[in-house]
Length: 464
Image (cartoon, rainbow, N blue to C red; front, side, top):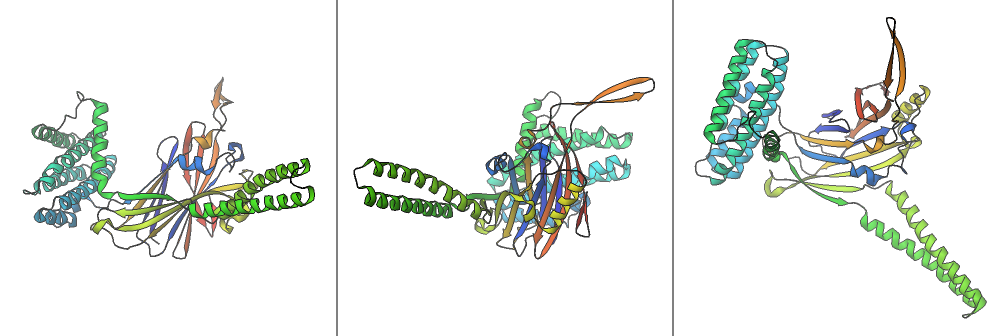
């Protein structure tokens, strides 16, 4: 099961969990278990599922393929051939899709390689990188359909994004380079790009520009280019019909009980008596409470085996926007005794280490079921980003700093230390008969996520 999992901090309050996978023949479940310390008081009563869904954001799309700049610079590259075929077809939509895909692959490869080679201070590799970038830019700007108006109108936007990202990557690298020869070569490329932007009527990217407006424009350009990877989603709540059937049965049961009380009191006390009136009022009270209790108890028990939402996925890159799959998601608190043996063993060991966790684990499940194995040309994988905003989970974190004293020579130093909490996060991936665990420990304070530490699984035991 070729699945990659990556958990990292997006910002101080948001956690980014990314899953990368190929189309699977069977449904694949990605379960995220949260074990909270008791001090944070995160439970089913204090943190209902409506609040959880309010602070979560999902984004499933196609993954940008992995390519090196050297591969992209080759005239025999698969993605360049796709671009050439799109130009020859004179189909504006096909051309723009091929160009967007090629550009975002180029930008991803550029950002990855220039950071590595700059940190290694590899001058020869940086010069080769600069040469490959010029060849790739020539490919991008050399293939434009002459007869397609749609392609002519979309090309300037993609070209501006490509130019802007290249300048930003180069300038970021130049601030860390000491070799004067490499620095001059890269600066020469940046100057050429500025001249090219002026010639093409693109906005300036210097200190005189409106920085807020420029950054906003860069985000819009990026979203336009990466739209080729997006999937159309249609979200539905699951179990609406089942819920209404349960509520109807509960209403029928309570009404039957009220009618029995009415028949009994009528026969015993007659129609027009104070005893009959009291019996009817009591019957109505019992009926109302019985309806509420029966429908809540029945639906809560049944909801343990149901999903909360269903998301239909469609792709613009496939014929007639074909449906590519469905995602079902559910969130619930699970009692420790209901967990599997691996998670239960982990919980018991934490208790032995004097790390008191809550009485239940918060589980968020995303089940991905692909309806077709077909993928668009040049794309092989899906990537599912899930952003968790944990601000509300930390609302009970202590705001009191604790003093700590130590000696520094003959001086006594006093430091105020924030209270730190450890949230245990375990990702469980299951599909095709295989179950895999990946544990993480989040060190958090009232100000957000401080550190993320990745653990391991040894002999079916979670080691942090």
